[in-house]
Image 1 (cartoon, rainbow, N blue to C red):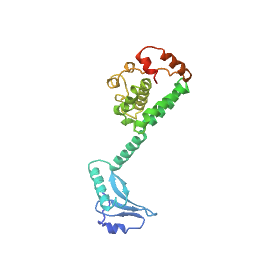
Image 2: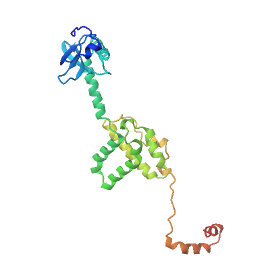
Image 3: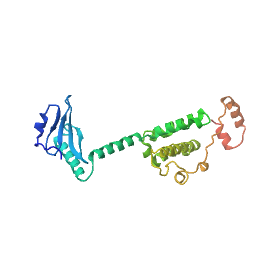
Image 4: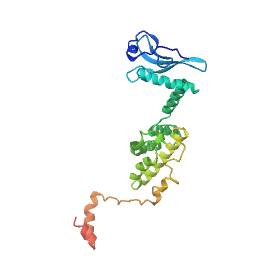
Length: 249
């Protein structure tokens, strides 16, 4: 059982200045801790598993005043009565959050790590440069800063659709590179090991036409400027409406 103290009001608590632990009442074991430097924080002294322990309840402030500290203290005591150690629970929550932050990489960070780890196995530096260039040009502006665990098919199609018809080969290679990065991220635990949103078979093949089926636009080679004069002279000799119409320009 925590130390029992008379219940103090906010004004009386605000006047406490001596360094040490000042029990303020309201909830058994609740105290205001004042350091020699004057820093003020709330502490709950409890007994858990037969051991006396002090549980921090945060710095004393306008947002975390006496009333809020008493609420937190009461919640902690209720947990102890239910057989829950609130100190270990809070420590576990902090550890989990720390682990989450450590594994919260962006797509760009994962791509850079993937390239760095595979670069030595690629045939030349040009290949690595192409990887970085296509991702930098097309993928990073859309989802480079997103947490890799949040990347989904909507991001992939937003990247690929604008270039799928005009730059089919580039788009196809880009899709494969994004898929490789996401597979790498899943294998390292940075995203769920579910269906890769950049996978082609059974997935994007339902949303985009097969690269081999996309019509390629082939432009005629431009005529050298030095040959234009002789070409126009020859064109004027040709019969037909198309030739006659073109020779007017």
